[in-house]
Length: 314
Image (cartoon, rainbow, N blue to C red; front, side, top):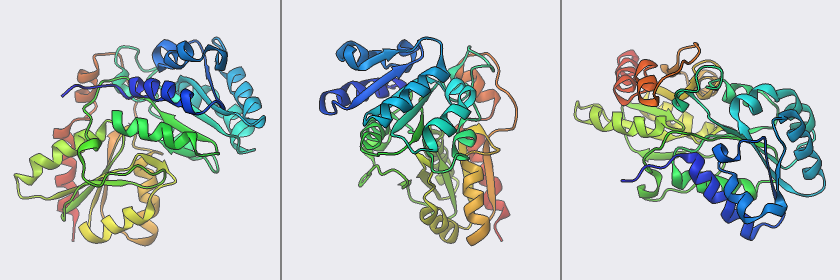
């Protein structure tokens, strides 16, 4: 099966959106060939603006356009949007609840050789602390295209991460799959442990669940593409029915999806939770596959975390 990076899917979806949504404007901070917004630029040059390497300025302009009734997709690396421009996004976009989609490309360590300075592993945490902010991390081609369409109809501020590494498409083959902002999707049933994953860790979770099934450990897999607002109902149901949870994310274990799940579980349905992700350390330069192995973001390492969670059940 052909693998495709979610950034490529994003570019395709953004271009398609331009044909049906004349109110959509796209801004980029001189990275359109990387965020793939160049596809929109080629088709609709009058609605595309290259703001140069001036990210704070870009988000200010995005807010201004949105205040005039436009739907704005503003693109740069996650390190520069969620990181460098946090204050501009908080005060100039989220506070007045403007219709701006903050796009963070190059999220996680799987961007490879660009190294620690560009491997943003803090974006979920930074963005989800902003009041009212929606935070999204699609896992594959199909889900990314669904997410872009949904965000175009969502008249509020949102953040979405793009991935650089090509990944297998898995959601299109799941019976009854339906994308909805704020709602997770059960991709695989299981009764002993639930893995709640986002981004590239969804594919890892499905692979781990398949291997663990052969060991007699049935694992439920939830694709939590929307990290905020979290689908607490689905999380608590999983806690009640399986009695243990593992969260899996290409993000620091502090502040991201795992933290959001713990906040829900500890208050209403306490069960053992194992956080699987980057262990509160910076990334490094290397090939994507080597980095995933080094940081334990593999199906094999995730399976070990699932066994640990199962062993903690009373």
